[in-house]
Length: 133
Image (cartoon, rainbow, N blue to C red; front, side, top):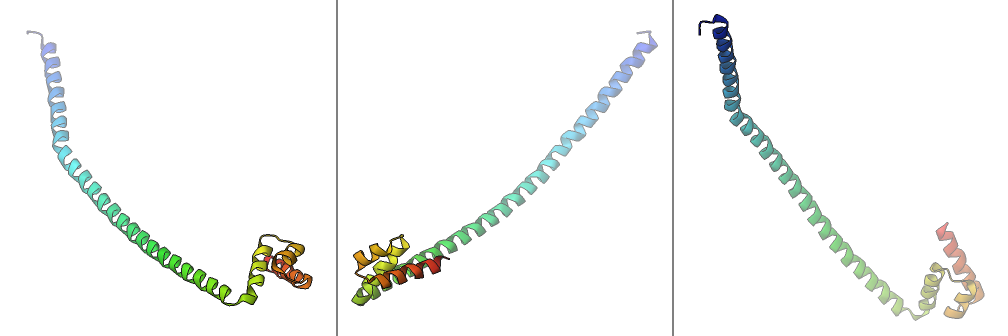
């Protein structure tokens, strides 16, 4: 070990090793702090997403309730329309004619199926055509 350059090289390597260990130690000490910060950010994001999910769920429930109410209202209106159609026997051929014209029936179809005169059937067809335009 009389060689001074060997001692210098070993000393330099030892210094580099100690510096690397110091950097590694500082990195290891910083890991828990970084992990806590990451966990805090993740927890905040989870809470935000939970609030958004609750909002969406409440909106979904309200839409479901409104949809149910609309279905009930449509059912009541259908029942009322059916009662009105059944109550007035003279309007029955006209209601049937209106449905047939909506399905594309011709004037001859209306006169045969509904017992309408040719003029009445022509009027139904013209009225339906003007509504579609």
